[in-house]
Length: 113
Length: 113
Image 1 (cartoon, chains in turn brown, cyan):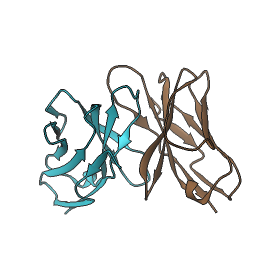
Image 2 (cartoon, helix red, strand yellow):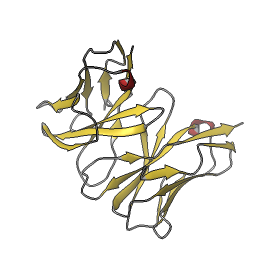
Image 3 (tube, one colour):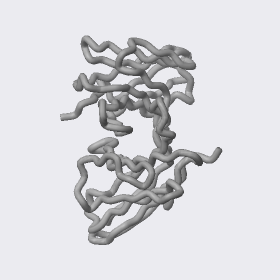
């Protein structure tokens, strides 16, 4: 069974630009969560989607948004990029059954110049 | 402040020895506690979880202990192997927060030959 895939793996943008990251969950998984990982702040929850609906949102500004499609694939968008948005963006999928195993993808490394 | 923290940022152990990684938490409303392993260039990998009404749970070569009295969580790895070298994170899921993981800052485990 294929794991969680994220594209692109690496991205370089400049301040003020916007970016869209993509996540394909494990087949059959309907829940997708996004996390930001930085050396200073560690791993921080961005949002979670289930059945195309945002179920939960972390403490990030409105420049960070996401969506989920009917096939459970998810995208996150960051508008008006700032230097501090440079991070590893991780996507995790789960079955939404009893148990807490969330499967993480390898992440997208975003660098904002 | 941070709800979940770790006692030591780094830990070095000899191959074959047992490793103990500790974590403190402050929120009594956590439903689950989870340990993740993150190798360089990869996303976090689920190791084991424990529900808040349990004291101990064992997996393959790993044991998680939960002491609710002092709000302390530990991960024990038996017969540590070179492949265990990674950053280990404890995380919690607060009651009612769906799948949202709140991560600690991580401990870098280095296995010495």
